[in-house]
Length: 229
Image 1 (cartoon, rainbow, N blue to C red):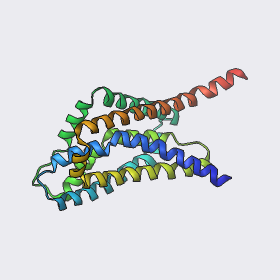
Image 2: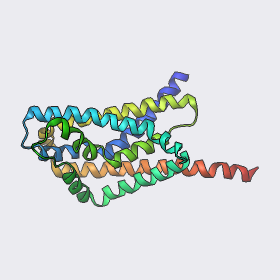
Image 3: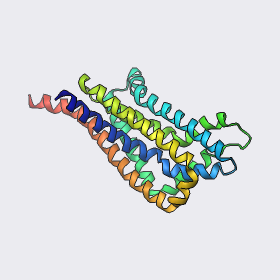
Image 4: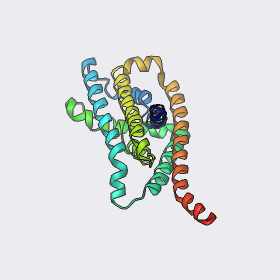
């Protein structure tokens, strides 16, 4: 019975984190831009870049997911405030993606334009991982997801297992789509990628709203209980 409950909690956190991170990272759409900015490099260099970026992206997302909320709590930011602020930021980012995807694409192009003379190790982390693949928006989403962790110790482990697996899955998607960016361009194309991006943005809007609702519930719940008593 306990194992079943733990599995359901892990699955719930996995799906929530997966939808949120996929929406903000958008591996398919980013792969289209990756193909353009690395067009002068060989297939072997692209494969090496995709491996490095996937690894670095996993580290960035896991660090933000695990350590982001505790660090902010250390500086006096309550978990409820972090949930509300993080949820609002996620929702605002999703609304921007829904209403003006072209603006984000232009910014992504500017962020991902490395100097051709730089070696792979240098450009894999900056700018192709930070800020192109897992930039401030991704970090904020990961921190907001981490702030949405349950308060019960029994559910905490299942939450972080599910959320961490989601982050690793997104990093795996980044490595796969970047490594096969030429095929992604051929199969998807910019129009379909933009449609997929808008659908993902709507999911992200739902995730941000849910995180905000949880934060507001944390604030108002004790007040309403006290008034009833």
